[in-house]
Length: 326
Length: 285
Image (cartoon, rainbow over all chains, first blue to last red; front, side):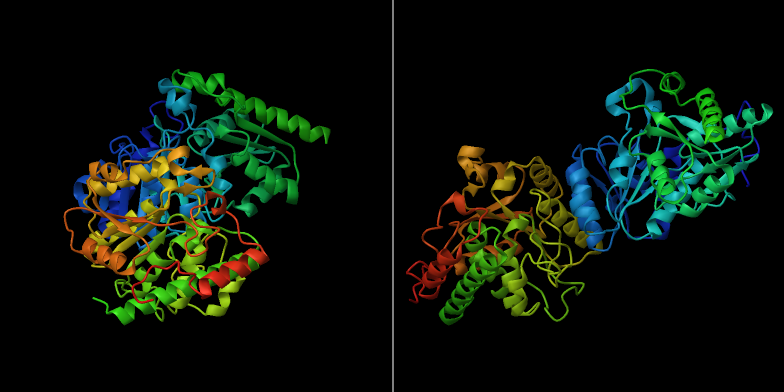
């Protein structure tokens, strides 16, 4: 797998994933006159300023009114446009969920929703602004596609792919700068998970979002202990790449899922749904343990709520021990 | 302008649509009587009064005018009007709310020819209509958008978000038609959540406001035509209607918001509608 050669360097490049979204919509704007961008008073934060500047006639400032914004996007899509609804995930799809369900998903319209500022690593703004439920509330809706890119480069690829995909699409970003994991050459296809590291078959780490980086670091460190794991970038939560997940379960016999989201209803739950039915193996879940976050620095919060490299390694050791019992 | 004979014809169609509504609701065993009956004249004027650009043989043609129904629960009147306008067979009406029918209890986007949006949970339609209106503006297209709304859904915050945005953007290709029938499920609107002064409220949000008698077909048509000539801002037509119009024991009663007639009630309702019961105001009678 072609990943960033400087991935494990101390000075690995870090970029907020939302930057990849901003670049993506500008590239789309140039290629396709039907692409429209909406925001709810978060133009700069969601990185759509450049799009707004270049195509003001295709940019809709909705003010702080996310429910209306989602409904307008439904109308635009029904009229043949390809809207990108840009806000923070706690507001959209948070506040606009009923509109997403009724106006967008039930009609299976081509509306692309992006939720910025997800996970506890939003940091100092505190729990009100840390979206930890967005994967759950979007993946439960019929017709939805749900994608969680691992870095800015993948976010750009996902944005370009979203414009071509039919039906509603949700993608989430983080606020903070996170390591650049992939390169322009790293394959990306919606619905296709990628094996990013394959040290062996003691266990598999199935991760999404920027925590793919922590998962890769954990895998590298575990290898020194003699524990050999596979790391999968499971960026598409829905539709899930059942084949890749099942292969990991079959080959490794133990799975740890890693996400910056509530454990309940998140990516790990989606993996468990697949495995419980098809190939049950012991699982451990790294994610938010059914509580709200708080203010703090991103790394402090990841540590406190159990999503650090150390916790991932502990979970791997634990799941392997359970495998032996079974 | 329509001549007297044409107006009488439209009044007769509205009366037929009311009879269809009663039959549909009786057969379904559930559904919303009052608002559906109350809006029969407005829907008839809109679709059959020569003001709307549509082709039932090519229901999704690009330059069609868009009609969005926000308060989806009055869909029996929409379905019946679409059938009378030739979008689909009249026989289908009786399948309302039945398993496998396109006539869903609340409308589903493109489930039937002419059904332009999904609606039901209140307050969502005006936003959808704005999306269509913005798309028309981006394309320099001349088609218009009609958002059919209820007064009860003016309780919803989303409605006012939408009113604000349409006013900000001077969306003159958008006409909202509010069914001001003064009732909602639990009672009279002014008891549940006072809405007045509606004219001042819409005006303050940069809309042109036209108030009409929603049972006077020439007045409805004139208001829709007038809205087409206003280029400064969007227009709202506040149509004062009587819920349950045409059936004396339903008229003005909020209890009939969300229930269908029983067999005996339907029989009486159809009798009143067939004989006009002296209820439909027309100089031609």
